[in-house]
Image (cartoon, rainbow, N blue to C red):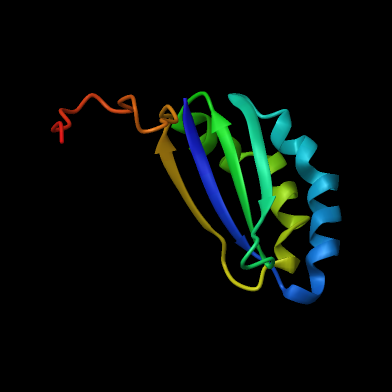
Length: 112
């Protein structure tokens, strides 16, 4: 599994319209091959910045998979007019959350 992280900057005067537009196109994302869920969250310190985190079975399911599809084209057409600048998209490998008492990565941690 991998995560796609998209940082979506929205015009501050269009935040509510953007939320509605996302609700209208999210089904296109949800039916994509390899889709395993998403989180869509508005920033607290910067409410005009949204984060879309999508869990994919593989990087190929997102890119080129979904990104090359007609559904992606329609998805972006429904959102792009609300962007104040180009979104930033990157990927990370799935990792476990840690509470600090366990190791999230297989590395040696010196004892204090």
